[in-house]
Image (tube, rainbow, N blue to C red):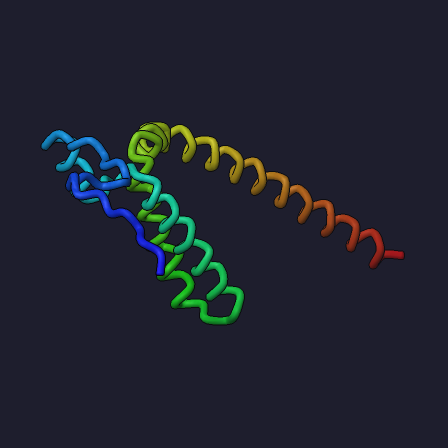
Length: 123
């Protein structure tokens, strides 16, 4: 039988971490803030799940899940949403101008098609 010496000093063989300040301990126990990485992961996962549901034919559920993921992502990027909201009237004006031009082109194409049909019917 082999004898193993045991130290009786009361000290652990493994170093103990230094005592944390009360502020650091409170910060470790504090709930996650909305700007933490977990919010981004949850938003991305929710968007992916919504896309998968839509792709598998569960359209309503997929749209609901994707909307929730989008809302969560927008909560994370509040400054970008404020900037976009401020520029929204300009975007709407540009879209209206584009649609007006498109309507003009379609009317012109319709007139040209009617002229071409008239020429072909006379022949």
